[in-house]
Length: 122
Image 1 (cartoon, one colour):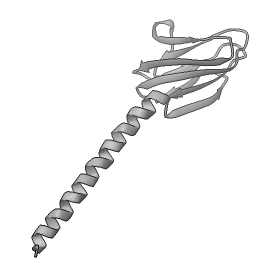
Image 2 (cartoon, one colour; image 1 turned 60 degrees about the vertical axis):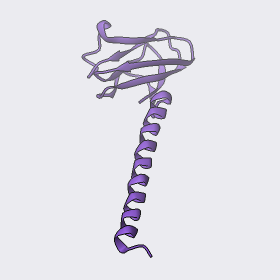
Image 3 (cartoon, helix red, strand yellow; image 1 turned 90 degrees about the horizontal axis):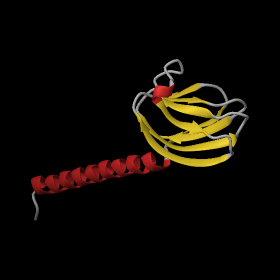
Image 4 (tube, helix red, strand yellow; image 1 turned 120 degrees about the vertical axis):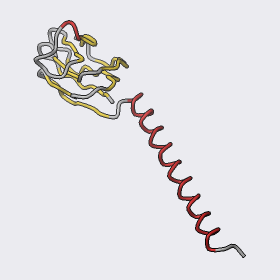
């Protein structure tokens, strides 16, 4: 017959293994979401700070192309957005564009005239 210490050690080992599996699944989830964009911003029609943290711009959805294109910047505020930190341009053609570009300072979207934009990011 197993002693109480043996039973408790076996139970502890099972809990540790389960904890390791949960941590591994959390890491996998983060990796998965970074590829598809775990966050979304919908209906951007004016200059907007989307994120003030580092991340990855995954997709750009142009809902209404407007009359002029806009820009997406790696910046910590709308005021800090400039041509020096432009990640990509926003086309005037409606549709989805896969971008997959990392940003380190934040994410600022400045739509062009009449544009409506959705983005996914992580």
